[in-house]
Image 1 (tube, rainbow over the protein chains, first blue to last red):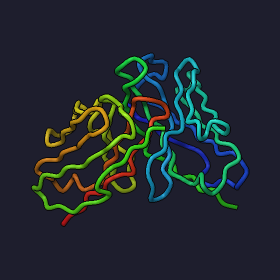
Image 2 (cartoon, rainbow over the protein chains, first blue to last red; image 1 turned 120 degrees about the vertical axis):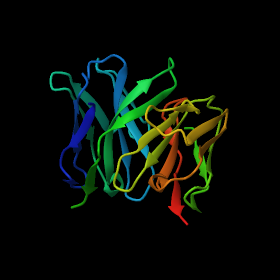
Image 3 (tube, helix red, strand yellow; image 1 turned 45 degrees about the horizontal axis):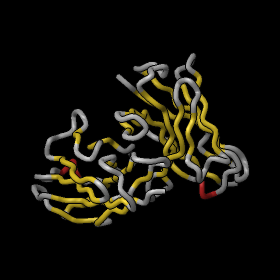
Image 4 (cartoon, helix red, strand yellow; image 1 turned 120 degrees about the horizontal axis):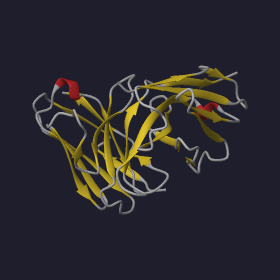
Length: 124
Length: 107
């Protein structure tokens, strides 16, 4: 059964970097049918896509965050990770990792499995 | 970025009601529209993809329709488990974007 689990510090100081890891179980992250991504949700607000990674290491980031985001993959551990640098209070959110499946070339995808989410608070 | 606008932002309904939520895109997105359900403290759950394809395991009382810029999610025979917030997401062009959500509450 597919499971995704986020892990990492729940409290980060302003100007520092936020780092989270998503551990995938039940399917190999090497599966060429899927991408792996991060989405966040500030408390009481809507969803914001952060970026995705393919098992090969190819990445696509939200332009609004691109200068601060790095997503990486460790296929030997079946994990992928998020690093967001220079955080501010505006980065306080629940961070979700998710599996993305494309059903049409170039467009047409959905996020069909999500982790439970990790709340990260940015505060001194 | 493509802007997604949902209406209404919230609604109250009785168990057994038929509920319709609308999502409008700022430009055409063909049929690249997904719907998710989110309950408090939980991750979103995929309900519908490609505007009208029901995700495996999702009850048939959920249905999606639309193409171009206007889309709807319909819940027929609303059940207690359906009280949640619903989000649309466009998967036509990067960055993918979500609507602001529609909260379905018990009347």
